[in-house]
Length: 233
Ligand code: SF4
Image (tube, rainbow, N blue to C red; front, side, top):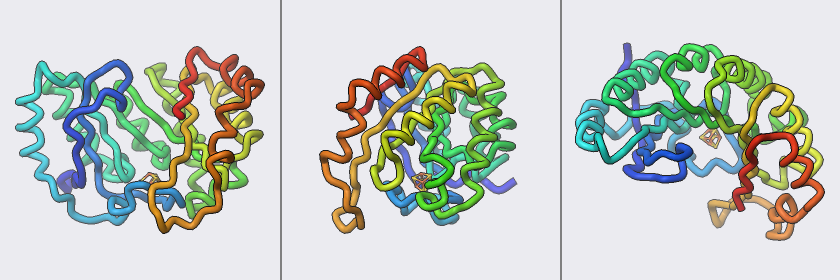
């Protein structure tokens, strides 16, 4: 089996795994091309600059200080068995396992569900805009399969939408929330779109980006669909 390729590390975070102090590993490779990607250097498949065995040694030294390790990317499940095997090794050190995923690999998510304790799944847009945003026409169908795979596990999760006004309207956000609720999810997050790069081509204004957060009627409707909704402004 090819060794896992790790391209980045955050050694301490309080926001990437609900209620736990965590480290985040950023895995190399992503099958889609989001217009707003904040980690474009992680998209190409290639060698990661971090030694996986050294990271395990470092994690061993963090036992008692960290509670969880979150696998992010890129798309952590693109490396399939290498990722899942490494997750098991991290779990065996005593850490809870978190996963941030775009949902592109439902079969890999099913295989990983035995070791992953919590997942954050990106629901990027409605079907109409998914290909425009991600550049990949099958990404939406894969996402829906992944949602259903995870919903069946009964394990904790958060489904989140980044509200880039170029690809998501207020009506779209409500449509997505209703679909996520219908699929049995209890925790939802609405994330503000923040342009990452000065030269990024976009024509959104601050008012457009904030419009998802200051519409009381929309908030009430979405809040009523879930046990918890986090509004990340
Ligand atoms: S899924 Fe994440 S890493 Fe992949 S292109 Fe989209 S934003 Fe970038």
